[in-house]
Image 1 (cartoon, rainbow, N blue to C red):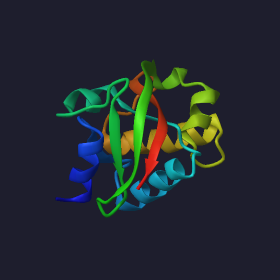
Image 2: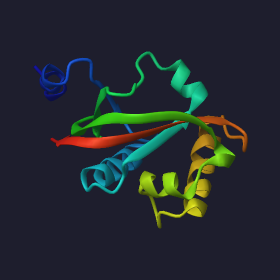
Image 3: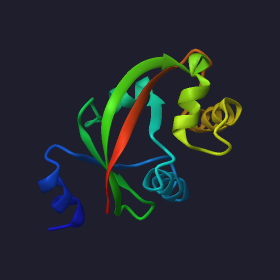
Image 4: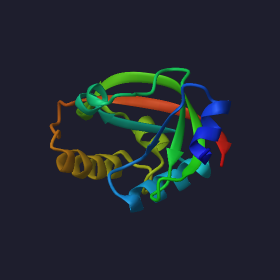
Length: 136
């Protein structure tokens, strides 16, 4: 049984996934979660709808590092749909990246969503807040 399978015994229904779109980004963002700095994330509504398994309020997720290994377990505590242009400074700070500013958040996420092919100022995002449950 793998470590992911072991964790799924303790957290039934948990899904396992990495943050970002590169192994380096997965490592960096998982570390921010482990340190308690990152307590929120977002994705494009279109990518959320395309996923076979997606988080829901109250559900558990096993956050993977860049090697696909579990780094921690989080529990989703809030979700909402928000337009990219309407993301607030508080949410940007909860994402925990860079200097925690809205300006940094917008620049980094514009690049990310452009790579994904979904970027538009009015694009809809699924904004998720979570709590750290366990460091693996």
